[in-house]
Image (cartoon, rainbow, N blue to C red; front, side, top):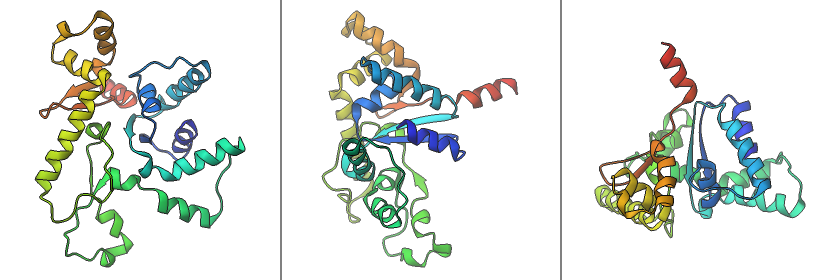
Length: 230
């Protein structure tokens, strides 16, 4: 993860979305749960130093099926104990095929009867993904059996309602999220002192939307300073 953040900084990225299939790593990076292993604490400290250089950082947890490219690289690195840069064009093509992250980040807005192959300037994929999903509300979206589960014949409103329901259920089943929801609602009597204290540490990073879902936000430190000066 840290290598990816370094690469993003080197390429001039200022607003970064970090996608991973490890729920624990995602939550530790966000500060939702503690990291007690010393070697990982060092990595986490380095991660915080790196992300502090960015205007904003968002985290998105996805199932491994969407993150197969990164999983393949990580498996090879663990087996060889060597970090390497992929230069082979055939391998790059393979990873592009395995990478399903765009299916999580973007919504296809092209009409069903429109041929994407005739999009101007070869921008079929870009024009089909004009709207970015609300990443905060998909933070803990449950895995779907098939990335293409939602067929074109389904009512978009019904699909969206079901997704909201799934996210709500997933958040309510995770005690940390459920405690945070209770804290934000002011229902602290239902929490032990320790659980309420843990929730209070995260309260300024989350809001509850009208659907009862937790939305994560991180103010852009650099941008905030500029706004203050202005």
